[in-house]
Amino acid sequence: MSYVVISSFENLSTGDLQSQGEAITVFPSEAPARSHFADRASALATAVRKAREDDVDATFVTWLLILRMPLEVAGVEEALEDLELVVEETDTVDDPFGELVVDYQGRRYEPSAEAEHPRKDALQTLEAWLT
Image (cartoon, rainbow, N blue to C red):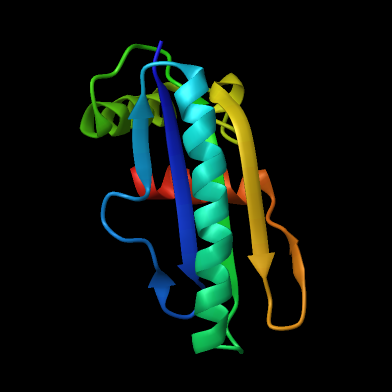
């Protein structure tokens, strides 16, 4: 079984702040996916601190999730195609990824406060990105 780690780092005014290749990574098992998840969470927290220094009035959103793929995938392109099929084929409109989500973490960074970013919002963003 394959696992995919997907992350998002966005300035709500200007858009995605991730470098190419940072948003999605495929792993052959859960252990390395969890390790990458932890490393990526730390990297996102550091990136937000640095971005906050450059734009103190901005609102940033980060989220990170691990998905257990329904079929074995060989790479990022295949994972994206499979996830797109999941969205197209699911009968559950509110949560097409359902049991595929293994772990999730999301934060919203306002100029004066920090709060959790709801998983539902992140999954809707992912769904829109895939379709």
